[in-house]
Length: 552
Image (cartoon, rainbow, N blue to C red; front, side, top):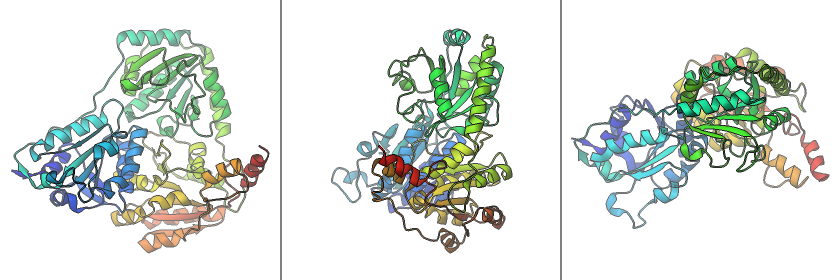
């Protein structure tokens, strides 16, 4: 006989969980007690939003569900930001929430929340474990559901008395994601569409990728000389130095890549939904008629035809599709290789960092130094803001598993993501880019990194404002600054106060030695990079944006 809390931990162990992220609460003390005797590590975070984002990032980097433990009421609502990331980014996530006792339900008891109503629009499944003997069943279903089809978050509420109730039950075996692949008829239809295409473009994104399927993608593209583009914040799926790489279809898209998409007569959308950001606010393709031949491959059947009516819809994982079409009998058109060569040249020109921006810190030089210095397996994380353009446009991703960034554009994501990445891959460099506003959303998780000994390096790019919002503000209401200024702390001193390494960088030549000292310290580190407010984006100054807004 075991308590519900012990059964929860036993079920997590059976699923191969080695680490959970959370903030403790009295509503799930029985789970915390069971973790005391478990090999599962409890990473004690400072805020439930940070814990949920860290768990989501671990899932993004490993393909297995991340697990987050939070308490009822305010703990659960704080975690909502990470649940939203998992939903939009198609990431498998398990959120376990302490809950009031079963007999108190419906009375608006202390910290009572109806989680089905709260998370029903975000989670794939929301349920409450109403008896200890159902723990193995519910945990098993949670893992299967989180990984199946279009992955996403699952929320399970754990009533306090369920966790202390005893039962005789055995944990279910480890859940594995169900694969899916095209039928022979679909493979034949795909081959026919590809054979007659003059200007095909392969666009990849979404989740359900593995290192093996990323390698299959490369082999498939090489065999047919197909140009390959990636969608927003999925850059790690294809080597940026490969001659077939055409760039990323995201915010601030290269106009030549946008033209390449528009000009294509066959668009192969592999793994991604092609939602608002990659579609450039649903303008690159017609809705529902895309205006060209589209092959849409996605593991979630509900996504096929949801926005665009495809010429061929295929419910399949990226790996399942690529395995099925690996030997498809199509002779490459010589024009495909020429088109790919032109597209890659356009990417290289677009992704060359600027030589000069306003101020004494030249971020272009910083990016060049990082790419020349770091190994190809270094992991980059970030949240949301104009500063992230320095990574997305100018960093050359070379390998799978080197990026954790929120497709949903959530601020504060970079730091908890870096924490998760370093704990999962302690031998690799993990670099977090964060704006001054973005960092302060979850900055307290730097204390978690120190406590865990996770030697991440955080670059806080500080321009004293919410830069992206200021950019839009100057464009729409030039010169009328309201609600976007920030008075910031000494971020380097903050790092040192936690017991980490902290330095301030005010000139370009200070960056490299400061970074090397941070790396050598073996401690979590913050490099406070102070940039000129005029350098509002990598290519446009604040004054230029304001002047353009005034002319509208």
